[in-house]
Image 1 (cartoon, protein in one colour):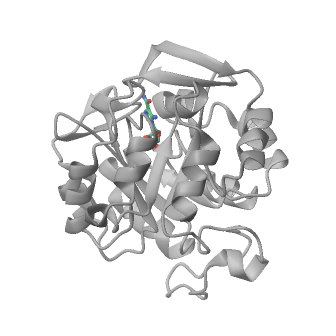
Image 2 (tube, helix red, strand yellow; image 1 turned 60 degrees about the horizontal axis):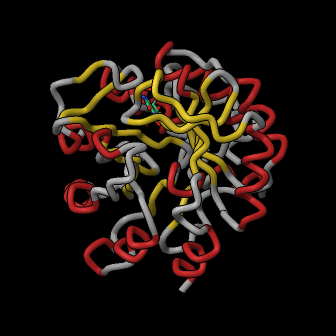
Length: 275
Ligand code: AMZ
């Protein structure tokens, strides 16, 4: 677990370079298998949903008990969880915090969390509550200095979410599009200690078109930061593709709708990834 309990001297270098989870002996991302499959819990109004193409009014509710869903993923053998506060991403502040709290209370595996996390205080609060890794999306575009400062204060605990539509990075719940390409945005964070980039192809998200592995790999080749593929994972064929040598540089992938609706069998996928 990344903890924010240390008092940091903001004028000097970080006092600890070791991953904070090691200081606390808590589950973390640093014992990752070669390819990680992250089941996604996207929260809308306290429920686990999947959206299509990020549209809030096109939501399918898969579970109204997020903690039970998280526990089910853990019991299926997943080692890591990906959580998004969708209302939070649109409103720019945590909205589904109670649901996230119940998930954290039910889990012993590490979780990464994004959606509406826009300042250091919120990052610190979630890390103190046991989130292993924070995902920053909108602030990575609007305030890259904040990402830099967060990485300095919480080494190993900050990921950047880069969500692209039509080749440009989208922000604010994907309601707005910036002028930046994914590669340009990743370039800003080359040397600041970002633990991972989660790259989402918005045009595939929730519509089972298959991962956009060529674009994800292009980004991964342009940065030294580990990249996770997201958006469109449709079947075991995506898992097989992830294991191809061409994509061996990727840290893993996010799975959402395919897992919830049974197109992707968790046992089969995890067995394939375990070799
Ligand atoms: O589906 C959406 N409309 C959506 C979504 N899944 N909008 C944002 N997000 C996710 C990003 C990232 O994980 O993929 O929210 C996170 C970024 O939130 P923020 O508040 O930092 O931009």
